[in-house]
Each structure stands twice: as C-alpha cells, then as structure tokens.
Length: 263
Ligand code: BJW
Image 1: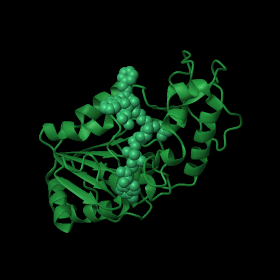
Image 2: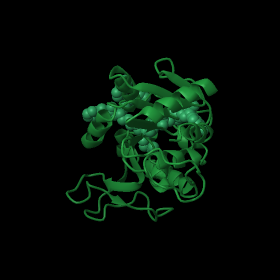
Image 3: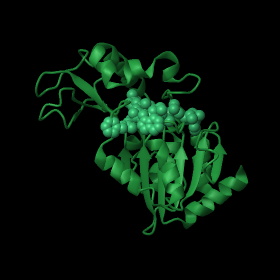
Image 4: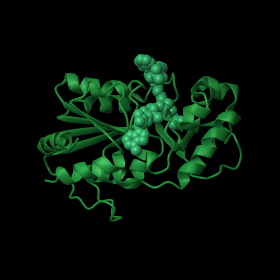
C-alpha cells in the first residue's frame, strides 16, 4: 500500500491537471449514509420507489418524506479530513486547522472536482472548481418546470413545513433539484466533466463505480492517457482497470497522500 501511495503521490506532484471524482464514501466518515454499503440507503429502500421521476409522480409525499429525513441527518454533518484535503488541493484554505499540509495548487496545477454527492459537504469545505453532477439536496426546483421555478432555488429549512413543498412561483409541487435514475445530467455539467477527463491524473474516491455516466469517466480518462487511481474501502468494478487501487478510508488515505505529495 505505501509503495502504491508513493507512486500516486509522485504522479500528483508531477501533474498539471488533476481530476477527482467523488462518491458517497468520501462523506461516510462525516456520518452520511452511503447507498449500496451494508448500512446503505438502498438496503432499506428501493431506488425505484424513491429516486425516479415515476416514484415522485406516484407518491410525491413519500419521496419528500425520505428527502426531508435525509436533510435532517445531513444538517448535523460536517466535512471530514478527506473533504478538507480535496478543498486545499483545489486552492482553498479550509481554515479550520483540520488539514496542515500545504496546498498543491500552484500556477501550474489545475484541479477539477466532480462529485456525485448531493450533500454539499465539498461546498462547505470550500472546494473550488466543483461540479455537482447529481445536484444538491439543499436546492429545489419546480416539478412542473414553470418558467421561473425550473431554474431552482435554495431551501435549507429542516424540517420543511409542509410536504410536498410548493413552487413559490406557480404554487405547484417542488421537487429536490437532484438527478434521479432515468434523468439526464445537465449538459453543461456533463460537458465540463468530460473535458476534465483530459488530465494527467484521474482519482476516483469513495464511489461504487456502478452509476453511469459518472462511472465511465475514469475509463475515458485512462483511454486519453491519464494515470488513474481509486481510493475505496473495497474493490469496485473500476479497481482492475485503474493503475493504482488503494483500499481504505478516504478520510485516512487522502491526508497521508497530501503529506507525501507536498510540493
Ligand atoms: C468508502 C468509505 C470510506 C464507504 N472511504 N470509500 C450505462 C450502463 C448501465 C446503466 C446505465 C448506463 N447509463 C445510464 C444508465 C442508467 C442509470 C445507471 O447508471 N444505472 C446503473 C445503476 C445500472 N443512470 C442514470 O439513470 C443516469 N442518467 C442517465 O444516464 O440519463 C441518460 C438520459 C439521457 C437523456 C435523457 C434521459 C436520460 C442518472 C443517474 C442518477 C443517480 N442518482 C442518484 C440519486 C441522486 C439523488 C439522491 O442522492 O437522492 O445518485 S442514485 C445514487 O447513486 C446517487 C449517487 O450519487 C450515485 C452513486 O453512488 P455512489 O456515490 O457510488 O455511492 P455508493 O453507496 O454506491 O458507493 C459508496 C462507495 O464508497 C462504496 O464503494 C464503499 O465501499 C465506499 N466507501 N466508506 C472510501 N470511508
């Protein structure tokens, strides 16, 4: 493991373009439940009952009860050491003393962070150049896509007063501004994510690597010649394809990597 960590640190130190894809695992140490793990959300709930447009059409109140419960859990969660390392690499000073490594960002290193997480913990850690490709649980939009409500708005109330909440513009149902199964990702997000696969190092952190199109990005990066690496508690479908697969908690491995890769 430490050899592989050293190899990855060397690659990061030499890189001009570093792209990081994160999934639910990076937030696990903050107390955010993952989807597919032993205690994962999909163990207790069926994705098709809660995270599809059809589910919302059938029972908007049930879907909102689930999101309201998750928002309540998330409200008490804070970014962990893994989020802070990535924020520092992206050029931000977390400012809470949790990460003492020097930032990797210099004039010559460009970092892009693509997250599948809707929890906004990367935002709270101060991450720059961040694309939230599955949206944010703290944003709502109009289910009927009315002219003013389609763009969405922020609502951080926990719990929400009435379920389902209403669109302030047309009075119809509001929905969580997240990407459900069967829905397209925003074209601008997808374009930036695909562009970011043209990089020197592509690092995937805490994702089961089964949900597309996000799961395809590491393969795109590899095809274009990037050095690819994975940090995860366990092996995933991506593990055999990447140059370095590190098994362990992101909140432990990322700070070690940051120390080794220091400029
Ligand atoms: C740790 C750790 C620690 C734990 N440290 N690690 C190609 C092939 C097959 C299917 C498809 C395909 N292309 C599209 C599809 C369909 C579908 C899909 O991918 N299905 C597969 C599941 C089979 N994709 C879609 O529908 C996407 N849309 C689309 O493709 O649209 C096309 C279209 C075009 C034009 C018009 C219309 C449509 C949309 C996907 C949206 C996913 N949405 C969700 C819910 C978001 C909102 C919400 O949160 O409620 O996104 S589902 C859920 O999965 C969530 C996550 O972002 C996503 C990925 O999960 P993630 O992050 O990987 O979490 P887990 O739990 O799976 O894994 C955690 C990992 O962490 C584990 O590996 C642990 O070991 C690890 N870990 N602790 C490090 N401390």
